[in-house]
Length: 53
Length: 250
Image (cartoon, rainbow over all chains, first blue to last red):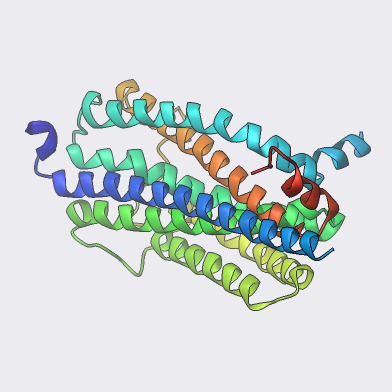
């Protein structure tokens, strides 16, 4: 409990760590989603062109 | 030598190498962050003035440092792109901007949360470090808005590179603001004359967090550059071959 309380600074300390890890996880997730999206768009366009030919 | 360098920075070569690079940066980065978080929160002794609130430095300092490093990448990429017209350089700048904005946001918010119990205020407009860091965030927003407002990629690259280069002045101001002007923000701790102004049990977790965050930033940047390269090269032959290859090339 002492570790959680952080000498009454717990809300300040834990909120900073939580926010940091949320932002990092979100950045990672967002870049993965964007990569998949770009790849899929290219895949669809190229396969449509191939079928047309 | 120049030919080798040119090959190294060619988009298809980077796209392949980048995929290999990401885990090599991410895994040690996450291991260092895990150690730094545990040691910073539970092993480091509390500060004699700030008590346990000082532990916020373990996320605030790496975020603040990366907010400047990302801008340096952006400006360096812009400069190289403008001078040598290297395709990958502009992709680096475009990929670094959202990450830089995220870390600047983190530096500002964690700084404000730290400021509340230590200075008695969330924000102080007269403080040069705080306001120059806020300007840095606006520069990132401006850079991204400028890029997205121009449809022609080549024109967007040039305009945003100029903005990135002009904005470098602000990074210098952010870094030296605590030395040049009187500030609420504390001065240099790690790189001051006579060595770091903190005990080893506080210092090692901080160094682990700084190196860990830098490696993780490298991994995130490497992935974003791959996406940027793929998008820019979407009409080229190598991307067509990559997508049509039986094993794929995600």
